[in-house]
Length: 141
Image (cartoon, rainbow, N blue to C red; front, side, top):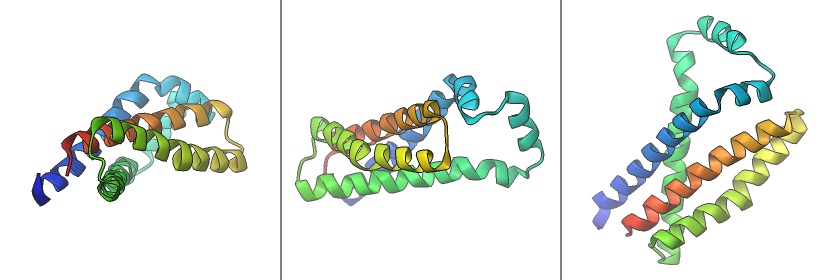
């Protein structure tokens, strides 16, 4: 697919994962807020006190993070020379299980977060990693 295709695959994977996250957290907004120990009113009040840039920052950081994840996933699949949909899904799942789930679980445990927050956020990242892996694997080198 060439250099342009590699960049295109990485960007498409990041955009797809970011859009998934938006839909996932929109659908789970109430349980997620409850797991955070907040109400919708508290959340809206916090947002009202911030600038537009401060409110947008987490969304931008999520996209940049997913762009980096897609680039790293490309690198893993490239070095394994395993550009297939199946390899992308397996690699996404393995990276999630070995790195993302473990990191989120440990960080949330030390921060005293509710178990449900760990579950919701970890599943969100699983979806993102599977989407990224699938797209990168499917696009190929």
